[in-house]
Image 1 (cartoon, rainbow, N blue to C red):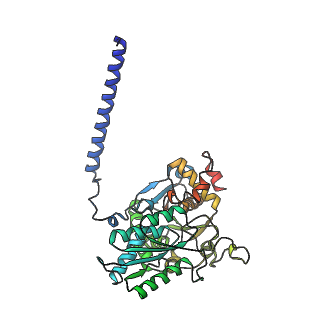
Image 2: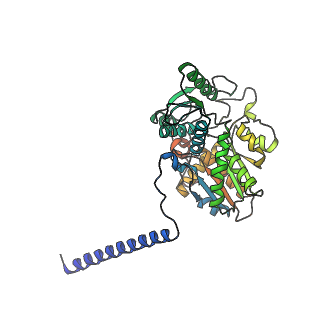
Image 3: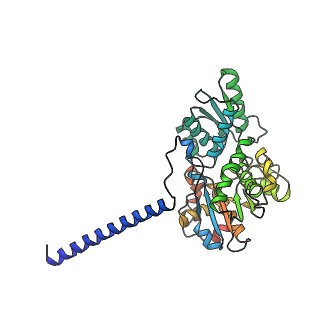
Length: 391
């Protein structure tokens, strides 16, 4: 090795050592600062169910920069089973235990009719607490959700998409399956009934709402959430307005195409044009968005409807483009309902004063929507602008 090469090698080694030392010093300083500021790692959890809740709140920088408002996403997708439904599933099971319908340590079943995420959360909770899950769902539910349910060991009952008045609609099918097993086999079983179960909105009132209030230090001007069962939006809104007196917080329901909540909130009538005779195509809510949108009033929605100020209609195309925009610009790989919420947040940011704080619910990850929603979203150009998203 020449003298010049040796000098270069020695300089490179010295630079690497210096960089490593600097990084180590910075890491140690950061750790000491976290400990000094009380930011210590959480204590070990005594079970996976103990990890539910206390989800992060993250600023969506692209939307914040573009609108002049501060837009945050409440990352419910960070729950152990990957969605906001973890909270609901756990609270429903715990409520059933309190009522004696399920007994800890003894065999039991939880039945539910769902478009996917609630079923996944119930299956995870049942495995953690020693029960079994029986899930009825539409047969056009995304393959990713079906695979997750089957991998978690749930009994899956696929039915044809139908209106709630049909006795074989997935919610009705779940209720019948529960009644049949309890009657014929004498087992302990409970029908979760997420649409009508009080445990749904109450868990968001008791946990999600307080978390958002604390994470924003009470400075929240607008909450944006979708509505399927109605539990999340009504529970959080009720907490913020009733418990904390934030009546000026504008609560917005982000509604996909084909759903009736838009007209219900804005005009008092639960109706959408796709309900017209001869116009309905796939099923009651004709959209590729899963998890939100409905054409009936549930107990959970009715219980807190007065706390919802406005509804915003979002098209499938807007949601698809927004999902790609958030992935490219923020590294947020979100599902369809989260994309709907983000579109509505931009709409509201253009009406609110600059500097307003908006919180959206980030319901689940895009990994559950690869074969349907993200099949279209991935085809969107990377360079798409926010203006193009909102068209």
